[in-house]
Image: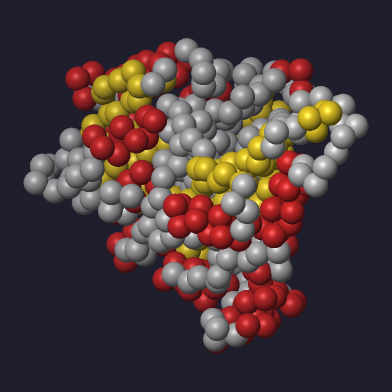
Length: 464
C-alpha cells in the first residue's frame, strides 16, 4: 500500500495525554530475533515488478514455513502475470467452518540506489531501525505474520477453522495476483490484511490511536484528451488544444463532489470528536451533531486531513501536450486522479467529469490502473472486539478508530466479492518515520515485539 495511517499526528496531539502507556508485551528474545532476521532477509530480495525476485522470495518464505512445521503440500507457489502468489494453509479442526484469510504482498515499489543514503536492497540496522525498501511496506507485517504462524505451529496450536496465508506479488502495480487470490478464496469467512490499519505514535513515542481500516476509496485515473489539427505557430487561430484543455481543467478545479457518509465514516468522526483540538475539533463536533451542517462540512472539506473522509475527490496530477516549440499543439492530455467514496461507481465519476468539463471536444477515458470498485466492510463486532483486545493488551484504553484509507490495497478485490476485509497491522510508528514508497524507508525495531503479540492475539480470537 500506501500510507500506513490516514491520520495526521498533529490533529491528535491531545490524545497523548490520555492514552496510558502499557508495559511492553513479555518479549521472547528468540522470536524477536527470528522476526528481525526474516525482515532483513526479506528486504534483500529486490521484489520490484517487473522483475524475477518475487518467485525466489516466495520459495524462501516457503522454506521458512516448512522449517517451522508446515507441510510442503500445504504451501503453493503459483506464477501469475510475471510475478507469483504464495498460499499456505494451516489446517483447522473443523473443516466445515469457512477459513480465515490473512493477506500481505511480497512486491515493493522501485528504489534507485543512487538516490538513497544506503543501498535500498541491502538491509541496514542502524539507530533502532531496519533500513531498506519494503522495510515497512509491506515486509514488516509479512515477516511478523510468517514468524507468528511458525511459532504457533511449534506450540502445537490448533485453530478451529483453517487459517490461510495468501501473499500477492504485484500489489504496487496492476494487482493481477490479488485478483486471482480473491477468486481462489471467495469462500472465506473474512480477510485480515497486514497492509493496512495500524497505530500512530506521537513524536515523543506515546500512543495516540489505533486505526482499524474497514474501507478504501476506489483509486481511478482518468485521461482527458483534446485534439486539434495543429499547424504553424506563426498562424494561430481561435482553436488551441492547450487553451481548450486549460479551460476544461479550470471547470474541474471549481467543482466539488457532494458530501457523503457511511457507517464507517460516522464511527470515525464520533470516535475522534472529543479528542481533536482547535477549529478542526469544533468542526468535527458540529458535524457529528448534524452531518448536514453546511458550515461544518465546508470547514472539514477545507482541511486536507478530513476532506477524504467526506467525499470523492478528483485532481489533475499530470499534463502532457504539444510536439514542437514552433507548432500549434495537436494533442494535449491531462491525468486526473480520483479517490472515490465507497459505494460510488468509477463509471459514474467518469460521467460526472464529462458533465463538469462540458466540452464535446474532450475525450474522457478510464485508464488501466489496476483498481476496481469495492464497498466498505461492515464493522463486525467479532473483529472490533479482537482488535480492541489485542491493542489494549499493549495500550489500555487507547482509542480504536475506524478508518477509511485514501489509498488502495489488495483488500478491495475481496470486498468487491462481498467478503469483509480489514486492515489490522500491529505496527505502531510515528508519522515522521513513515517513508513508505519514499527515500530511506525504515521500520522501528522496537515495534516487533508488540506486533508479534498483536497477531497471535488476533489469530487465536478469530480462528476459533
